[in-house]
Amino acid sequence: MSIIKDLEKDIYDLIKKAGYEVENFILKPSDRPDLGDYQINDSMTLAKIYHKNPKQIAQDIKEKLELDDRFTNINIAGPGFINITLSNSFLIHAVNRINQDFYNNIDKQEYKKIILDYGGANVSKALHVGHLRSANIGEALKRLANLLGCKAISDAHLGDYGRPLGLVLLEIQKRYPDLEYFDSNYEGDYEKVPLPITNEDLEKIYPIASQKAKENTEYLEEARIMTLKIQNHEKGIYDLWKKVVNISKDAIKKVYDMLNVSYDLWNGESDATPYVPELLKICETHKVVSESDGAKIIEVKKAEESSPMPPLLLVKSNGTISYETTDLATIIQRKKEINPDEIWYLADERQSLHFEQVFRATKKANLINPKVNLEYIGFGTMNGTDGKPFKTRDGGIMSLKSLIEMVKEETKKRINYDIVTQDKVEQTVDIIAIATLKYADFIPYRTTDYIFNPAKFSDVEGKTGPYLLYSTIRMKSLLEHAKEIKQETYHILEDESSRNIILTLLRLPSVLTKSFKIKSLNEIAEYLYILTNKYNKFYMENKILIETNHNLQESWLVLTNIVYRMNLLLLDVLGIKVPEKM
Ligand code: ARG
Image: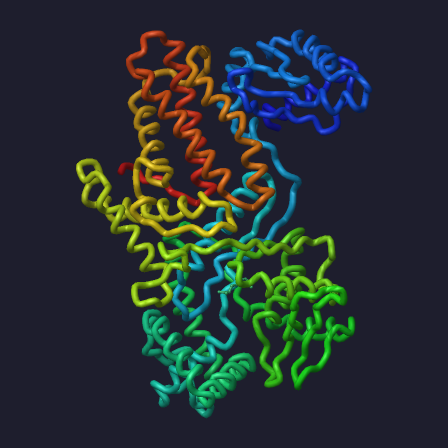
């Protein structure tokens, strides 16, 4: 349990001793740091309950608090606000407690098994800007949930089963009609049939095929038939599909590796298809399916609702299933294979309707225990300076790879080539560029749009990834220079800068808890910046390495060590790596 939570419990008891009982007692960091570190605002509420003057209540509480030497400068302001300052001896004790184990200052959350479905990559399509936020936020939420004592399981849920694949396979057929995959009389082993196509080819094929389908209804119809062949596991076609999926999956893995995003499960929409018959049966049993123009649908609109809510398309009239159906079947699959308490879906705001339909249909057909929380976690878009989703110069969709390249170019301008040796340049640039991109993505609240500005994001002096990395490396370097000096115990607290760092450390648990609750990393990103800033001020003010008071020097090093490790921990939660040098 965190230090502040412990303190809250003790203060609650002291207030009780004064004769009052507070519901949900919470210590509030002071709005007026000149009056105290924390404030207690409960006298006003208690006044109504106990029919007493709030000032009198504040006075009664103050008397009890004064008996406890952890508090100093207890004063009453306004109608009955109590300001308290934490004593330095208490703060010294707090530092040693944190130094012993960070879990001494983290509030674990109620244990839950959570599946996080993020990334959203689609097989044979290049990852684009929109996929960045899903992967970035999802990965960090997974890490945060694990840190706070939950069990988070990540699933890539690759888009590998819908029409796009039909289009890609059709276009391959148009280009290479003689390939054995298209010959159902072929007797040999399809596994051994080479495929003259690379991932780069695939990424180019999809936009071409998709354009053709828009312009030509016959082509579109052929693509539909191809999709059906894939879904019917037709000989040859299904083998080709498997190959295409594997080529693309390898390429997708490389991009996610680069982003420091990893998955426990690499399932795709197709992996849920064995559960489709069961899904259809459950839907029939619960009588939630209706027919519409030869298709099977589930009505999900509520009677009292006036806004549009189209039905969920379960099986199309041509017999193919769509994205909605695989999502429903995946819920059955996850229930059977993992039995989660929650499932979180990260996809951009344009998919909110899709998830609403899926969740409603799930409830209607009773696919999973209603206690299982299905949650859609949307996010805003990364925009260009024109305020519209970031595009390439010719107005096309910007691929994630090109975006990363742009940031790398900025990074290359700024690393110190005297320090980073030639053999480390590439790796260092990669790490910094990803940190730059990721940190900038966390700064705004999750659902807020933001403008892509590589020069600003890369500035070592701003609220940026590189600033945090640079500062963290400097802490490490200081600790390395001091490695012969004892760094065990925190003894002395005299300077204001150290005090501010410690008060910031005490705020950590509430930041983590809030981030977890709102499922946005902006609080942690901001906290890292504040902590690092406070540390840098302290670093500038004190000549740590040449300090002659050994106890003071040891204390400063212990504090440095804590902030350093805290930065590593929180950067890791954000999925950001730290280079050796920069
Ligand atoms: N592949 C989808 C897309 O790119 C996102 C998948 C999100 N997850 C899900 N279970 N539907 O739009």
